Image (cartoon, each protein chain N blue to C red):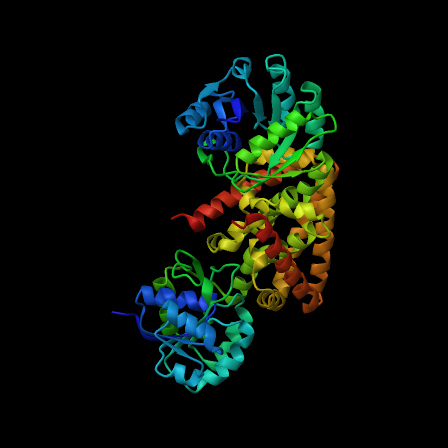
Length: 288
Length: 288
C-alpha cells in the first residue's frame, strides 16, 4: 500500500523529474502529480513515466495532495506558496529540495505553519532538465531535513517517510547549521570548480585545449551546472560561503608560500592528510 | 604483424600495467616484458595478462628490447637509466609516462642520445597499483610528446607508433611548454582538490562527514591519489605550479570581494563563463 495517496511535485527539472520517476518506481504514492509552467517538459516527464498527471494550473494540481515537494529554484517559492496556500488540504505536508534552508524555512513557515519541513537531498548532476532525470538519483544519497521548533511531528514523519522511501539516508540538522555545512561541502566546491575552469583556461593556446585529462574533467564537473541557479544559491548563502572561501584562501596562501620556498614538507603533509580524510569520507557516503 | 618485436615496460603500477594490458590486447609487440623491483606486483601483472615475461633483473629484461617505457616515478629515472644504458640495443627507443618533461628530457638525453622521447599520456586514476590497471586506460587520451632538437626522427616515429597504437591522440609540444600547460591543467587542479578536502573538512562536526554528495566526491577525486608521487610532481614543477596558483588566487580574491559585497554580477559572469569554457573543452577531449 502506498505511503501517500497523492504526491504533488512542483517543477519538472532534473530533481523534480527524478523524484517522480523514483516515487512511481517505488510506488510511494497512489497518484503522482507534476506541476510546471511550460507544457513541453511536462509532456516529456509524462512520457518518461515521471508522473500520473501533469498540470500547468497550480490550484487544480493541489487539490487532494497530501504531500507537496517544491523542486523549483528557491526564489520562486514565495510566489508559488502564495498561489498554493488556499488550495491545499490543511493537513498536507510541504517539503522541498532547495540548497539553502534557513531563509527558506522561515519564509515557508509563514505560508504553511507547522506543515513545511525543509529538505535538501545531496544529489544532483551538472546536466539539468527533465531529459536527465533518473529513478536512482536519490538512492543512498544523504537527505538533510531541517525542521523548525514549530514544525509539527506529523510533517516531520511524512517528510522522513518520503525521503527514506526515495532511498535517502536522513540527517536532521538546524537550518542555519545546514547552510554552514553545505557552504563548505557543496557551495565552496562549486565556486572553486568554476574559478579553476576560468583561471586554468584563461587565454590559453588553442593546442592546450586538446590535452585535458580525466583529472581536470572530474575536478570541474560541477562547473557545467546551470549558472543562474548556482549564482542564486551562492548569493543567497553568501555569508557562509564567504567564510568557507576565506578558510580555503588561507590554506592556499600557505601552500603557495611552501611551493615558492621549495619546501616539500607542507606539500606532502597537505596531500597525505587530504587522501586520508577523503578516503574516510567517501567510504562513509558512497559505500554500497 | 606487431609494430615492435620487444616492448619493455619499467614499473608494474597503474600506468605500466595498463600499458602492458593494452599492448597485449592490441598486439603492438611480439613480446611484452615487464620489469619491477618487487615480485608480488609483477606476479599479479603476469596473471592479469599485462606481460609475456616479468623481471626483477633489469639487464636481463633489457636484452633485445626495441622500445622501452619508463613507468616509474620520474625521480627514479637516472638510476634506472644508468643500469639500462649499457645493456639496451643501441637503436632502441626510450620513452616514458612522466608528468613533468623539461628536466626529465634533458637528463635522459644524456643517457640515450637522440633515442629518448618524453611522453605524457593524460590518463590515470586516483587508485594506484597494478590491481587497478585497465586495457582501456589510454583509449582516446591525449598523449603529449616532447622531442628535443637532438631527438632522432626514428625515435619520434617509434613513440608515435606506440602511443597511437595504444589508442592515444598525439600532441607534440616543447618540453617546457608541456610543463606550463600541465601545471594549469593537471597539477593546479590536484593541489586545489587536496586543499579543498583539507579546508572543507577541517575540524567539522562528525555529522557533517555523512552528508557529502557527488559534487564534493568528484571535485576532490584526484586528492585520493598517491601523496608521495604527487608531492614530487608538484615540487619538481614548482615554478609553473606556483605561477598557475597565483593566477587562481587572484581570481578567487575577486570572487571573495564580490560575495562580501553581495554583488551577483561577477558571480554570475564567473559561472556562465566557466560553463561555456568547460562544455567546449569536454567536447574537444571526451567526445566519442
